[in-house]
Length: 126
Picture 1 (cartoon, rainbow, N blue to C red):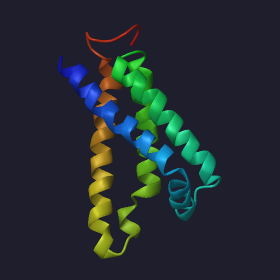
Picture 2 (picture 1 turned 180 degrees about the horizontal axis):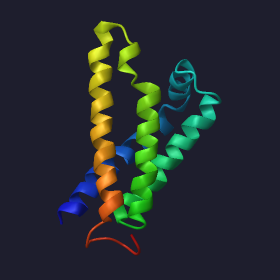
Picture 3 (picture 1 turned 90 degrees about the horizontal axis):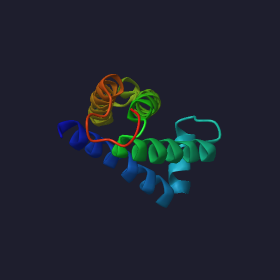
């Protein structure tokens, strides 16, 4: 039961941000552009797709290992792009550091699911 609850808690984060990115598409693309991402509108679309598809897969436990690995890669990439706290003014570095290490912990949780699978309460193959 704990793996189910953990999967649902993590999936909620990704699904909520997918919806948020849809609601704030242009603003998010502007933020992505400021970070130097090429094709920021495409990048937002891909972020929505990864978070939505992998988030649903993770919640259901269907191909949860694949979903966890995909989300882990997404989180690591997003963290290295968006939360380079060492490049920030000291007034903002602590906030970015908190996001960096929070995301690192989230990637660790996804690594566990990617390694162990979804647990007993899941749909289909792991």
